[in-house]
Length: 458
Image 1 (tube, helix red, strand yellow):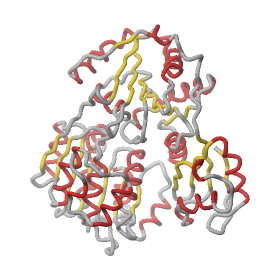
Image 2: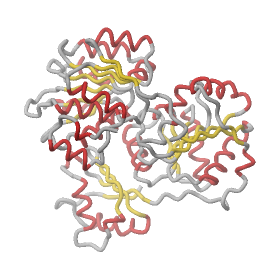
Image 3: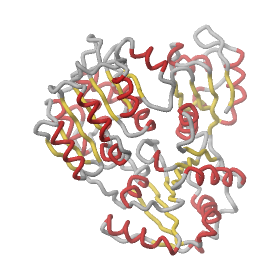
Image 4: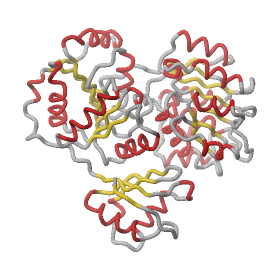
């Protein structure tokens, strides 16, 4: 492994990477960052969880001029979840670059506030193609000074039918720009787009199939009628502290969440019928350990980046083996071990065969009779609870302000406070169960930065 300190980066940038515990580069970072810093166009193939966001983020921030108030970088993502995740990572990476404005433009949220945010052009735009194109058509977004274009998970964007939108967006950018294309696969259409928008791109390929040394895969053959009961037995047997369960349909997500709740499990469902506020809330609850189980459709398969995700369960197999690989790639990240469990009925055996062919190795199939010893029907109890505060970035609220309000001149120990997430007009703070009533009282009766805000427990 090669250290970030070997790169030609500012001392402030290296110190920030150190504070983020980014010390050694992943293979995709090692191969791509020097080229990005050199101004080269790249076409990179890498699996999910490989560290590509930091790769292009470090590169484009290095040449950003925060004193020039126009949009210099555009990052296009296939889903709102991925765009939000990329925005958060970019903000963390941009800490050493003072006054950097990063704006997320996605559908599913009111467009009016985005008009206001675009009146003073952000340095970096992260967005989905549909909403970015809408702003270009309304002339509320200008890309004539763009220096860097990033297509993140380009194959997924094409799968979702964004090809025409992407080309219209690219036509609104200068010809002299750096174009960075990241994709898990390189189908012919990706290569065609690359040829039309990039100049002598350097092709980078890192491992795209997940190694069983990091992810332990187990398949269980089941009766179709026993799918939910087997899932409950699996949860009781393995007791994962954080688990994503993938379903093929959104109604299946809703129904399964209700069934798990009735069986004593704290589960949240993520699917296409939720508005952005609901989606953010559910992802926050899962990421801050207020919920141990997230049930999701494939809309979240590539946009989800939860640290220390211990396991993934495929409630049903995807008909596409490539999607299967993206699903299980949510666990076993950054060298940590992960568990991927898949349920299949006899009629789904061809899907198992397709996965084996794609992975070029056989899978391990276990009998459900091994799940009978379920540790006395043990339930998974999340360690945290989430408090919701009706104030956010637009109120100039920072994580330190919330932490200070909770711990300064109070008897609440700082160690009981977990992850703090701040959005435009709302913030969430995770608190250990034993202290949540005390924390709620402190915030309800006290002030944050001299003002009282409404606080409630989710």
